[in-house]
Length: 375
Ligand SMILES: *Cc1c(COP(=O)(O)O)cnc(C)c1O
Image 1 (cartoon, rainbow, N blue to C red):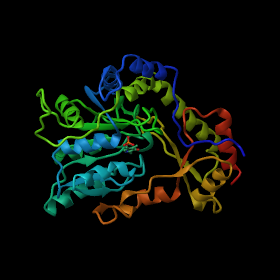
Image 2 (image 1 turned 180 degrees about the vertical axis):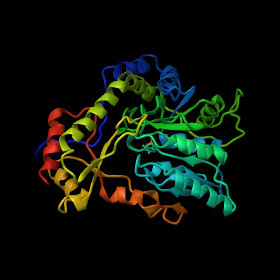
Image 3 (image 1 turned 120 degrees about the horizontal axis):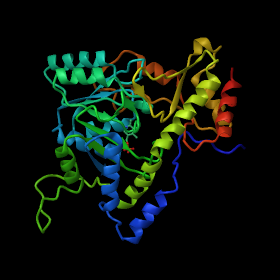
């Protein structure tokens, strides 16, 4: 059996261990400390956001953002349908209703035309959505220019789910910094990892201050434990933040490596007419977290996404269908959805290829040879 090739595995650099050792040596083994502060300032600097709060996960960051926007039971929140469930779960934690929006074909993210149609329809039905959650899937920036125009027109705050898009930009401006708040994830499979963790970024210091407060059990300023609001245990540990600081030193390199993976696949496979790659539009820069392709069965003599996935699996190579849209998930299918068929088609025909920054040329060649053998 050939060795396993993973879809996206953690890739640590030389610096992480030194930061973690420093946390041990100085006994800063707590959900606060110098590495947490340092990681937050690294994140703010890298994204160009004025402020950042390091948290226990991207999901926690999104949950706090919704809480701070006053999302409560009975409210509606607009969310991209084509995404990981973590984009929608926190809406339901608050007892609110997710309203799902389908994708456009250019970036695979939230379709601005459907977004506006949904807002008009929800307002006509008597409820103005409390927030909009677009997602920058696989690192490809959503059409934030148009999305922000619509959000501003109807005065609805935007929380960008940039969990997969650290390092992605539109005209040089970081994904996650267009809306009122943005969220990042440092889960094990993301472009950089803290083993598990996330962050909230915002130019408005008040949101970051309040996120810190809520994430540490909403403890009021008093010598005893005093609470006037419900709190959460959502902060990142100083040990994890140490890993994050090390990862920040190699982030630029990781982005270059992921982009090189995409370029390699594209160069090696673009002569196969059935395989389509997702391109960047003018001004947009993707971190290429995962290389995703569409397999068009009508151009392939019957080879499908599933043919390729099974063929890769036979050679111990992990690949994965694209995200199954939320409006097709059993747990979310009863919620309102504004659908054009794009995300369902992406789910049916799309495949994520191994994209880790630690893959070797030999690994990538093995993936390419396996795919080519099916055509
Ligand atoms: C990973 C991810 C999240 C959640 O991040 P966690 O840190 O795992 O909680 C949210 N949205 C998207 C699109 C993601 O890929």
